[in-house]
Length: 127
Image (tube, rainbow, N blue to C red):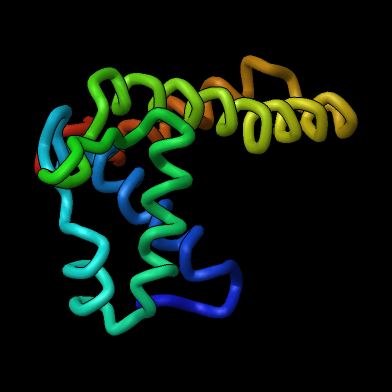
């Protein structure tokens, strides 16, 4: 499950945020405890705790003393907004810059995206 590209705690945090974005984890839903997570994935509990604390610091999770960790209200919308911003900054803006540099008109890019988009299922369509 984990790879060598980034620290395990970061991969755990990414997995949890991905589950929130996909809707697998809902607002105010309890997540596995640090010890459950560590046992399930066979990792050090301190590593799982570091991931959880990072998500608490980012406002993605919140703690209920003596009960556990929960998905913070508004997390999904906030994460989606961050990912949209990152998508435009890392994917769309460089693509448009390259297209401009090599003389591809915006209309050609739009036509291409629309043609390719017809083959892509709509979000939530299940196909």
